[in-house]
Length: 334
Image (cartoon, rainbow, N blue to C red; front, side):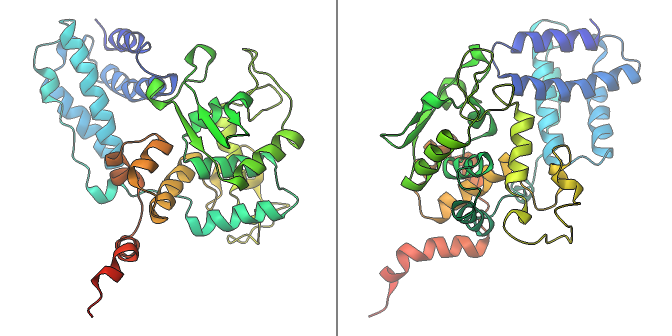
């Protein structure tokens, strides 16, 4: 069996177990390996060996990819090799020869975030400006307040907003193109503060386009075609977090001529933030505000361990302040 055919069979078998987004990630990671095999004249997967797998790891490492990226790629490759073992296409034990490089803790969590000292003034500005209740305002505030993933934000329908209870519900609906990353385990109801609920009502009444998606559902966030794609939502979030929304450009550009303000270049703005950056900042903010870890974990649908390792971006000084606030007075010397 050729590496390309094995790759396709593996992905076809996994599609029932994983979301489309995860499938796309695995597709890309293994595509790199398959193309390398073809360029290296490896015609069948039965030729794979520990030496060949080590050569591939060295090849990717030599391309200067981040340690986290290489770690994730080799994990996916190991899963692929385990599948090949199961169907007896390669020697038993080959998967154990896939080296998965360790990632230093500081690099695991080295990631850009939308910091609270930027997010909160920006949200307050939206509230007091002519953009109050606009799509960008609501997109940012809902994402910040709930800490939800991009897929979760995209999945929301009007029916998921409970005005009387001031809550928002995330529901796994894969049959109509809005799966949640953790499937049924990602379903949850998240309470909203008064201000967030009020902003949502304002948006729904005045700024939301009255559209249905191709399945007849009414998305909370709508484009002219119905439910926006993840790329469209990502571009909207970049635009919602432009620094020039509430002040002058820190990079010396004029809004009227800045190329970053176009839909296709929004991600290039050095100060704009993606939905994942907003999620990261939101989780850190939840922690900084003293929200119990188990409550944060349930709101944002992530384990406490994952939050500690990958999302809580508090500095050493911030962690000291967190420890000190609730307990320092207990240590007073009479």
